Amino acid sequence: MELEIHGKDGKSTGKKAKLNDAVFAIEPNDHAIWLDVKQHLANKRQGTAKTLEKSEVSGSTKKLHRQKGTGGSRKGSIKSPLFKGGARVFGPKPRDYHFKLNKKVKDLARRSALTYKAKDGSLKVIDSVSLSAPKTSEFAAILKAFQLNSRKSVLVVPSKDDNIVLSARNIQNTRVVVASELNTYDIMNANGLLIVKDAIAPLETILTK
Image (cartoon, rainbow, N blue to C red):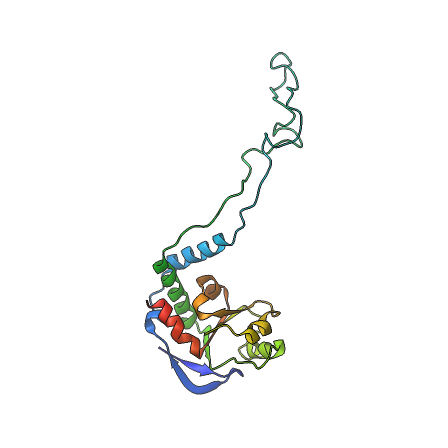
């Protein structure tokens, strides 16, 4: 599979990048994508929701009236969930939402997501995005050249570049990700995926082990 290489101005350079079909042109597995995205979102949950149960609510434990003979219901104490200010029945408790997913499934999910982006034309290869200094306006100009200035986008770079990271930090809906840290959620959540030419090789190496 081959894709055109674009410059920072969004125009074709006349050269093409060869992409590995085992990464960018497989039979997509939707279930693997769903599992990987589900794990990513679950692992981000804090799980700190908590409500007070009967033993934790402040209030008297004195029985409000005798058990029988009043014609009313039986009430244990003012802390009963039936009363205003009382406890909550079966309320949430702090918990850990993390779960394990096999590496092969995660790799399959990323390959499937990349295949979808390559098929629908959302994946673009860019020659270079080197910046001499942090400059938000220059990075915004690159996004505008690819018609991504008001859409969700991800730029995949071969290694961390502080100038690029700082330039993109204040732009909404834009992420800069190192090839080794690219995940399925980032790919599927983006309207456009820009991959620096030099980031293709390390990405293919990771996903074809």
